[in-house]
Image (cartoon, rainbow, N blue to C red; front, side, top):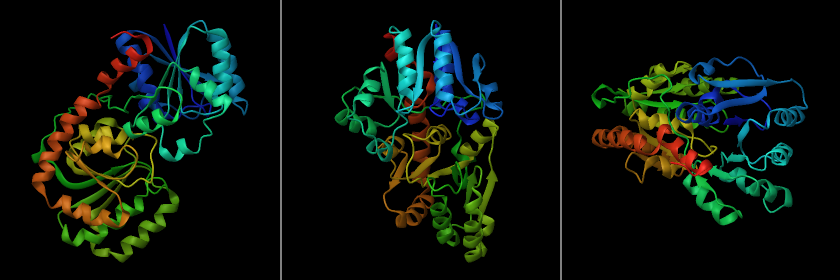
Length: 364
């Protein structure tokens, strides 16, 4: 049986191979023996392919006619294409799905919405084409419970909850020892992008750094060029705190990245929005981090009713919230233990894939 996944933009990014886009095909291959193929145009090198052995990357011709190339690929491979995985409710999927349904009426289609309220509210969902798209997907899922509730009221279909989980690709030791954690506030992502709102975290920490002399904030990820001047401007305003701020750049080794989570006491997210639940949340839970997050759609899922984190609903309160949490070691210790238990219980991809398999095939 073949599980095939494609991308609305016609190509895969290396980072997607170890997100749900690549993890679901990989685990269906690993645990159930299905052939797993990601098809699309080549966009650079794919070092993350080492983490998903058994998953094949089929590259299509380069060029602007990527939708045509995808349709032609489906035509050529439909007999082996028992499952088609799509990501996001994009209109460019309609010709792909029409091709697939014409050839494989018996095939199974899984649509992962990657949904957030900004995007879903901008979709003209009550159109003939969009309703056709929904009606021709066998499983439609979102990684955020709030979005699941919202879309089940709004759309004429059933939307399931499938969280973006954690899979231990690096086979790192996941034992978390709170006594070995450092006074670190960690964030991971595209530092300085408008979506991530990294300046809020930097400014919030600098405002309280003098009251947290043993603490530091650590930014892991590629720094957007436009954000560098903001870093210089803020650090020049708070020069005494500059030694408490660290920018590591991207950490590609997943074992080293997990060690950063395990060392940090707090994981902070200041995003304006995310596509469902960010992968970094599940990683932070497995690393035993206490979560301090902005009020994105998936925030309630990640703090587990306040047992392992807190939601900051107003930007101007982020600084005081960090200070309150950082100076309450008992809350951090208890929250860390709960984060680990909650992560293993609710965000382990080895558990999640069983639900995906059941939804697709009705088999446990």
